[in-house]
Image (cartoon, rainbow, N blue to C red; front, side):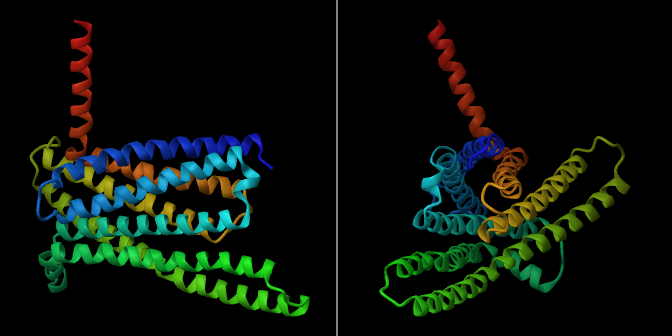
Length: 311
């Protein structure tokens, strides 16, 4: 039953998703415009385009989900629609987690200053590895979502197969047990992007912090622009890590139905799940001047049109 408390939380989640759609649209437009006409795309732009496009679709889908729950709640919880929603949610959220992890790995490889042979090998070959990394992410996300799609057929079989009550119950239990095991096995791989993100962000923070301390010892004053840029980078990377972990936990809670539908835990997870990628998107906008140029140009264009119209 939809309560005012649930409507409030879902409305907040919708607003957060809409803000994320706007932010990811800006990033996608800015990154794509720099790649148009280029034969080879820079690896950073490939990762950012993949991340922003997956988040854009994910947040569009989440907004539609929240609206259906608010206005057509009984329709949303029909078996086939619920399964379809779970499949699409798993595919989009997992791909977003993978692409976010690869962005952290890319930052670490390009910015961190380590001298290990494997790290240097990665730094020299990252441009060739990025397309394969992105393709592997999509394949892993599809593999994790497929078992949820099979649940459609199990539901259909349970309601239509002309079996005796005993055989039907036994087959249903066996199928559900196997399906649950398959879902767990396929989704176990989602721990890998979490490990990649945590390790790469920690290494990057460590490298930046060491370099910052070295600059502080040699700096002549507190207003050194390079020092301030390093501190800003540390804050950005740390916020990436925290937001990523919270988003990861919320995705798992929703995928595996840790809470009852529309319970306090479920609603809080939905709000945080919508907030984290949006906040991460705006941190990207704040930390990269390239993404700030497009809104500035659009705003300047609007101001020119307003002045022309007023004259």
